[in-house]
Length: 278
Figure 1 (cartoon, helix red, strand yellow):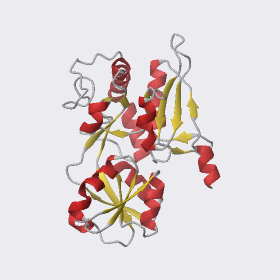
Figure 2 (cartoon, one colour; figure 1 turned 90 degrees about the vertical axis):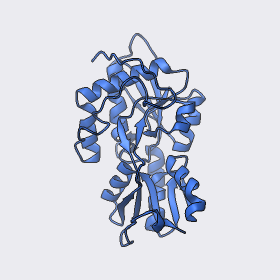
Figure 3 (spheres, helix red, strand yellow; figure 1 turned 30 degrees about the vertical axis):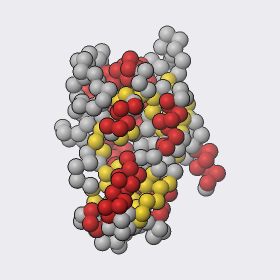
Figure 4 (cartoon, one colour; figure 1 turned 120 degrees about the vertical axis):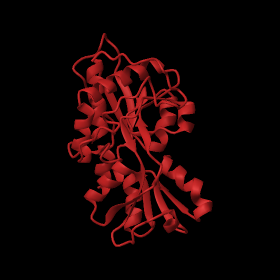
């Protein structure tokens, strides 16, 4: 099984019809263990919401795209080193990250949610976490939340390179709960009978956007224009319903257009009005 997963997480090349004016392929990185956003396919390579989304983005740009799987904790350093043009991984937009990177506007809202083992009493408030061990995917805002609240709630952090390992720690009793994004927790719960989606941390709604290096403003804006067109014609909403099981409402980021480029009120935001050629 491990050999299969290792093989499935090798780089996947997803091609658009033709290169635009001889331009090289776009290069992006993704955590290929973060279902249903990106995860191994039985046919080889990776599949998921992110793969479908950015394959369509590249197609509309007239570019080929190479999507490479790697541990999430190494994706941003690899992009900053020039390995990727941007990240296809769903990346939570935080102020700290926005100080160092450029982001597109959000195309999905994310909230921090706990998953627990079936039979565990529901978490009703943060106080129910006191003294507990929490599993997370390494290098994420979920790890940051546990670290920031460890002293206040006497939490023990258990960080893993992959989200499935963090879920298994809960099922095996090594962790009391797993903290991750709401879409990922709900998907894991739908596929794992012993794991259930539970408490959502209030006030944690954030953009899931696409990060670029600071010197890539033109490409950031170009990709955001394409994402805006995909919001307008319902493509992102259709992909969301396919992979997450629910049709997004009018207040969801899959259909909401935000002014300018980047998440408003955060570093890197460009108030220039969008003018996508849809």
